[in-house]
Length: 637
Image (tube, rainbow, N blue to C red; front, side, top):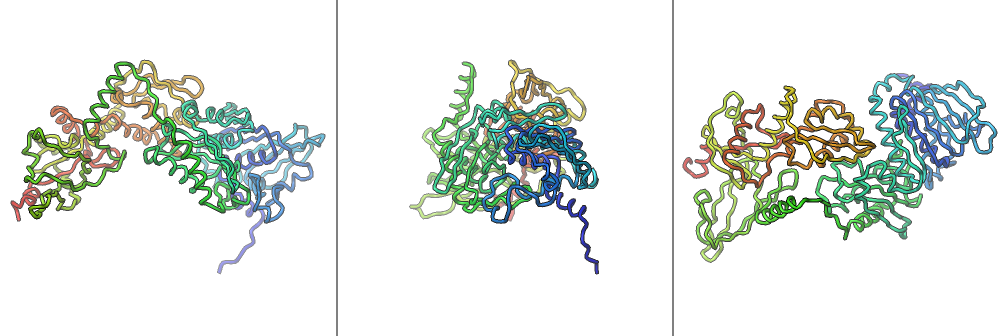
């Protein structure tokens, strides 16, 4: 049996630090929250090497009394609460008394502090939990923490830190949220001597949104206002129009009593309110401040205080849902566009054409509807392949066709009484068919016969006693993707198209940082992007294949995809992510192609190493053998 040991003080402190100090951003969070609790109106955070070698936090708050400094670094020492009863009504951001002791246990910490009443300040140095220096020093009112060499005494934890740029990015993200949470406080963030964020503390939330997220977001805001109700809940702030929705939740910001949190109930209320205004799999921009009575919420449920519990989830859900839904209702959410006379005429023509045909959405844009039975004339149905023209008086209600996934389905009329109307009924169930890989193998290409186009989306070809059905959109996606990747691999020059005038991108700090880091990948793909001052960038050239695509939307989607991955260091993965979006230029379904275009597309697809799936994993081709067809027609029993 193993002997039970009582751990020494140093080990206990390092274990406790592991719950609070995960990375430099964790240290910054605890120290900035302490500064806010101390009544500071200005807070400055400066880092070197992402905060790993140095993190300095300076505030003009109340400071720490000289005789209380040693006590402040003891475990569970705090000025925020006195007993467990205080946890029910705690209003400060910090309250556990673990931050300073945990930081001091794994770093070299220097403290300079002075209260308003003191004539002289104090300097305190503690390294790895051991006191080194405690003396008087001259300093202004407030507190300055210098945290050096994080995890210097725990190398096993230090090796799990990311690069300096990534760790600095986490702190930048933290400071942006702090600025949004307290518009009345001036925040300044510096990295390696460069100012990345500086707010005035003028209490204008919209100004901070503009500064952090850029002009495009600031110009697409809707104010929200929910006066205090009978439960003491009130809501204020801004939400974004659906136009600026993103593919992830990184821009869903909400604060409870000034504290940034993550909460499933609040996210669900926001997203449910947006449902009838925005496409699925999109997430809105929000900067919402929610005030609730202190006894209404339990903040002591997460070591980093990022989660909490409400006494009444239903009341919170209802208040947020109503606030967001009311802000969206009755607003003009039409996307503003500027067209020349020629473009306006072309847009009108396209609109007329769209009204004359049934639009079949591409997969991932909208789930296709199940096929439904419909009434047909009493006359026996004529096989569509034999019909060349419809009678002049023929009318039929158009309906969306199902996505073909597996095999061709036989449709036959069901016998009814003479007085009854005949209906079509599907009598065979879809089954997954194995694709004849050998026929489409790169080294075993056969001549194919093009039969024709079906539903203006699928092409039918005959090859080696097989019927192949090819999705033109998925096939074109694959061809464009492979062609782009091959050019990059062979270092072939990609043909570009100049934009006149250039396109101006207004980015947030995180987006701009992401773009800078990945600029070589964009250049390899044919984008020419230059800094245009501040957080704006100028796009002067785009790949020729993407001329017809909304490049602004494409670049925004690419950056959001990269940001959602948190890490964007692998150049090959970045290239694949960007190149996979070449499908934006792929021909859509419900588009009539000429026979020559179709033959070229199919020929190109058959030269690929893997022609079976598009970049998203969706099949490009399904097939049916001659034997299966003859079984359907009862030629073979």
